[in-house]
Image (cartoon, rainbow, N blue to C red; front, top):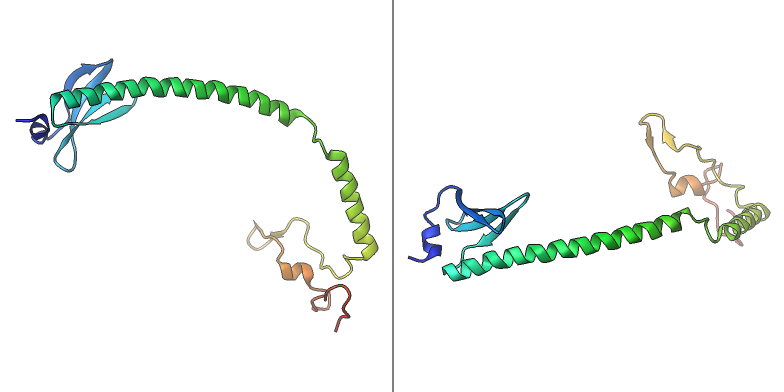
Length: 161
């Protein structure tokens, strides 16, 4: 009788021994077959193959894969720590274009005042909080664009009706 056929008789978890420093268990699956499990701090499952040799190779491959994964994770951790140091240095540097941004913001405010773009704007509450629901509500487009008499301002260059 093949291993895969005998594994169908398994009804509950069964400890088989130890393999490569892990507890080796046989576990029943919902489809009536069984799977092997290497149990340490986490669980690693292996499909039972048709032959003992195939099942043994699957176990060995799982252990080799764990070693490779551990090495890759260690390398990734080292790279991430180096990147964290670099990013922290960048975060602590002053914004490169801060003076240019301040100049452009001042110029924009000057243009808004010269063109009188705020003359028909409805004042927006400073906190944007609806007192009835105590939730922040962003002002809608119609609140921002309606004039005080309820008319929607027209585009620049056209006369208002």
